Length: 502
Ligand code: GDG
Image (cartoon, rainbow, N blue to C red; front, side, top):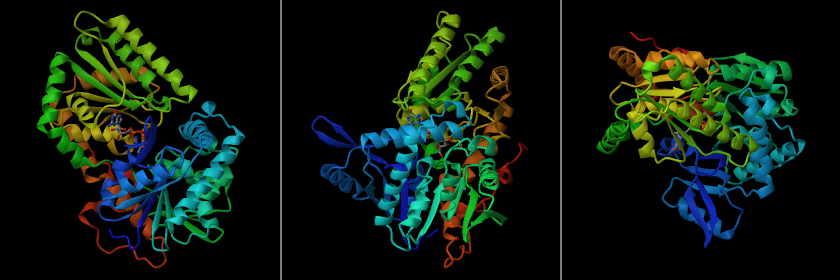
């Protein structure tokens, strides 16, 4: 695809972070998968990335960013945020209200009205920063729940260019969403974007159902391949774009000699036990305590599996400033020690627990070494770990057990074993089933999963979204012929990609 203008990506954080350490500010790569996801898009376009740089605005920080931009196809535009704004906009509104609410956990929300004030102010500042680097032909692409009001402020600032928004997390059903005191303003602000993208059809339909209930004056039109919503004469297109991964990159790295050696070595150190792997940010939506309890049920129900199965749980530190997250860490660590206390015997520890960041190579080593990926999210926008695990299964032997409430289950359901994460006994049975699954069945399932993830890569995702956004312009016709990366039509619902094992 070709963009006539430039791409202006706007996200809460820039892909690089300025940290103040002794001796002045330093630049590092910031956490978060969005940078990796967009790498493929920057290969054929250029532009700017607007976001928080992780430190107060300073001349030195801006110099560092300008230096970091050299050689990249995009420049950085830092949005300065004070400590108080970070606390109320990011930790507060985004992560104590929207994150739990959109993951169907309203009782965890802290509806502090001050958070709302700061959320509005910060969204306006992001919009101003985006407008400053944009001209009429550019496409603005805003990411995630931190920036739901930015569409409205872009319009107020007189922006005439195309603006799209992609939500990485789920969109809740009306009964949940309507608990939000600022529900109507948020929905109407989202409709100020030209293009809205959701991870799954379920999220898209939830959004449309919320509009029907809360903004009944908005008219939904079913059009192919997207649908449209018209409010006060403005049309917004609404589509499903499941995010994916750079399949070949993961697969090639996993197939490398380095990773093979490390993976064999790791398996040898574990005495070739059957390895179950969990990899998650430490987050209450990921269902980590549920997974541990299910593993305990497995070991109680099937004593013959003791000594034969090991769970490796990798937990990446996350949002440690929020009280809920501290409590979760304690809960997880207590469960790990209880289970290990109950079952450990000479030469076998049932759960290996890591609370730290891994390098990409370490992660791939564990993906490749594992027999099962166990994903038990209580709710998840997509879950890229599931797709990365498939890419890393170069010998096609791993089994994916995935929560029906992870977005990825829509695409992966026929190759994976799908579980309800609240059904702990069901998860235990699924692990048992994977342990005794015949090799041919494992292979058939993993081949299917790898085909699905290979066919629809992150590049397809980004191109599909941007093409759909571009087609909202009155002066741009959708392009004639699909490229080889677009074997899948723009907004094919995940169901259309589902395949069955032959
Ligand atoms: C949000 C939505 C949606 C994990 N540990 C390490 C590490 N990771 C990488 C994984 C993966 C990413 O982090 C986690 O992505 P997920 O998709 O699983 O989850 P969230 O962080 O919650 O992401 C989610 C996603 O946005 C994209 O739209 O799928 O539903 O919640 O890429 O590989 N990477 C490294 N070391 C680790 O220790 N290097």
